[in-house]
Image (cartoon, rainbow, N blue to C red; front, top):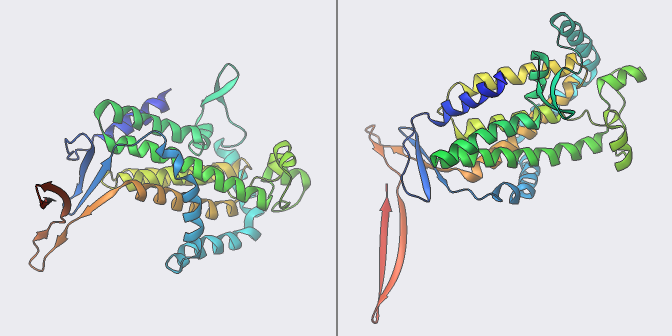
Length: 323
């Protein structure tokens, strides 16, 4: 319960971070800094679902575009480097995890037999990569946004759900293609680094999931997508990044010490979460960037809107300028 209260307090803190807000009923404008403003329109409920297929397509395009060669190459290269080191990293992580108590399945508060909320630090760290944590943040932002007519908060909540669903589709597809077993099951089979059983049948995957679902990590991809959505929508809230990176590092270690994931399961997951989160956010945020003249004066960006009307035989053109 304390963790829920802390999350909701953080949501309230960065949602009320002193941005200027346009009072027009159909849009909000937030001043990020002296050179940048974000504009948000009202978000419909179904907007979080309609762009999921395009998010998958955009991820595919991202991986083959030349300007993203460094990021994609780093993710693939890191995976290949870590593969032969996986078993050693797991052994070391487990040894350290046992010393600090970060091992096992963890403890949850249950309601009607359903695990609802973590009861210790080890489980809480694992929980931050769970979709439930992302929905908790999204739900808090949505409630705040609706109560305060804050379009940015509502849009961010919608983006979190959209990215969560998109990441789920991508990671599940790759898991079923790679068929890599988790460290726990590899320990039983005695295979260092785990077996790879590509393309299991649907029924086999559902019946024996741990034998096939290690690569990539859905928890890391989910957390990275949520984290990216927050940093893209709230770049003026400086504490999000250090807190996010710290939590993701702790999450990655916790899952290795508990033998849930290999280290090489993470690079592709980070790439997926980042691309999906950024794609989702960039689609929703309209950015107004001011420019600076040679004399250091700020040159504002202008929006021109045209309208036409007819009086008798004459057609009139109207122009409105917003700056």
